Image 1 (cartoon, one colour):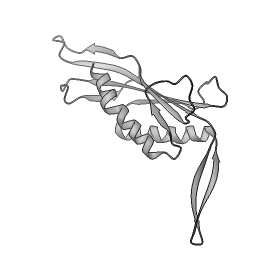
Image 2: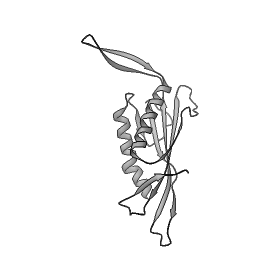
Image 3: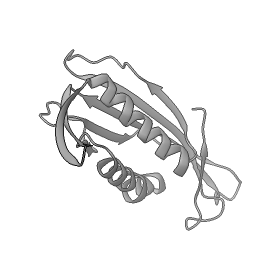
Image 4: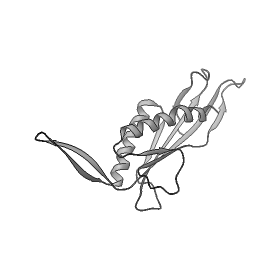
Length: 161
């Protein structure tokens, strides 16, 4: 399947690398939605069901509507911050709220998506969560993958699905 291949080989690995390299909270990105985790923040990313549609009578051109769901789960965390004062380097420990962690990671992901892909982005900042100690932000992406230029030149554009 075309969308699954793009998700598994391009989108997910690139997003995972970007998030894990560019955040200060040691976030872990996974394809599996964890039932129980001791690692926070944790960011499960999954491909939602894909729908195909033929666009011409010879069935040569196909479009695939798809969605991607990104959950951000975080708890309050203490992080190290290096401060230089009067020529001295000091390490201070700063407590960061779970909501602020989710918001910062969410902004980072949305900026990455907008600069690299053409998806519709929907964000639920205070998504319902069973555990009150864990804050959850939900990002939903919707797009259409078009094969009209062949499988070597796939086009992705927004979908209002």
